Image (cartoon, rainbow, N blue to C red; front, side, top):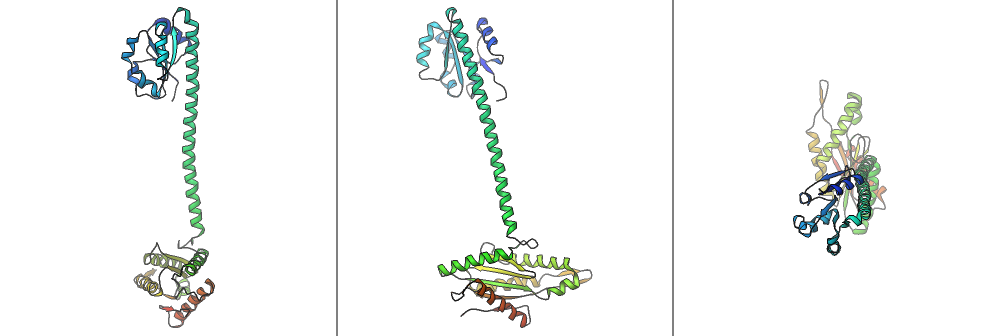
Length: 314
């Protein structure tokens, strides 16, 4: 609502003069044209009962505020009618002039208060709407910050802390529910040579490409890839045995072998070694489980690199 306006159908000059004295925002209308209006204030002059035939009063008063100005002869009729319909009544006539003015003023003042209240409600709804958006934005920012906290800045994989926290949860869950899962630790072969020969920027490019290769060859819904540290990466294969995990490691290796990196006039490829172990109830804790995977990785390096080694706790 931009302005409080009172609509009326009054053509009587004396009534119109009185109305203009009380309210400055008036608009003449044919009442039935406003049947679908909402929260509008109407002053309707009805001289005789037949005038009601031109107005759908019961429909009009459902969503609007209506003051009926009528003659004294119809007062009782409208008082009874108002029992079933929500509207105000003012009696026109020589002996009721002061009371008529008081009733109109009361209706107008009531209108201003309702109008002010509706505006306040509208402003409150706008504020709630804005607050809802602000809250959504805050929640989105919170989610982003939480995601940043568990991600490696360069590769966008999960970080070392998240890997250990998740591994602990999987370990405890598997112990309670007699489930399996596998972990693998992957290490890029001769990565120091890449940094020394081609520079750290090219080394960063290789790390990012390796991370992407890992993501492309695992199940994003089940597998949890992390940057373990430096050129080492770790993957938790949830609810998967060593055989399933090995297939995925082999798929990562094949995909990486198809990637070539360039530096000036040189072209080179990289490989990785991997160590895997599967959860066993015989493991004391995650430290021991990681140790098994690390020892398997070391064996892969010792045996010539670019291969997988599995070490299980029997």
